[in-house]
Image (cartoon, rainbow, N blue to C red):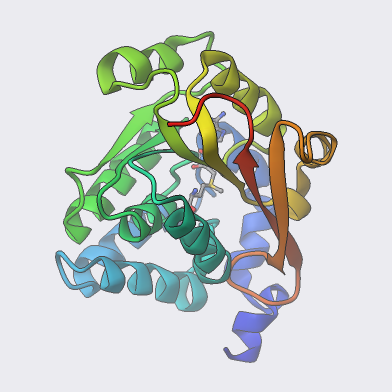
Length: 254
Ligand SMILES: C[S@@+](CC[C@H](N)C(=O)[O-])C[C@H]1O[C@@H](n2cnc3c(N)ncnc32)[C@H](O)[C@@H]1O
């Protein structure tokens, strides 16, 4: 990793991201077209039908072309290991962005069905193109909506996609940092987790999800058993981050 890759403050595309923070929360995109550029870059440069090459190409784009808010390669390896341990059949991601995280989930769990909930239709379109290029469009579904939209998205997952009590093996939470706890609570209220289901949460230190972290600390050994993985924020090594991996201790055995 070169100096510009290690120290993101030396990269214009990282500084531009800071200017686009408000844009990200309203539109899901930075505002300079980098997400659409990523799609074009993948189609032009990654081998079709090769998940490894598509992921490596996205990482290269994020390091060399334009910084992206994917889970990234370093935290992605923590996610991969958690997924392999859980060996899931049904996975739910919150926050699709350009489809990178879901692609890692699909690679680490080759027999799973992956659902990813995304606020922004434009991101869903990009992610679907990326998944099609990687050859996994039949296993990953993007549902446009939010868990907090009054039950519409949760109902769609139940009625159109077969979510139900005790069927959800793994949740990857990586969307609106203020919604982590409420959205997990909504999933718990539906009873979709079973004993041994795993919840992985990104960005617990940066930008930070203090209420979620505090909740997991309070539930330690009762409702959840949590490991805090110390790591770095995506695509650089200057800023620290935390990924939480929490095993659900409630519910029925599958
Ligand atoms: C950090 S990115 C997700 C990165 C992705 N998980 C990955 O690793 O490639 C956050 C995404 O969450 C979306 N988002 C924000 N609030 C949301 C919400 N309440 N529900 C669903 N998606 C949301 C944003 O539009 C953005 O695409």
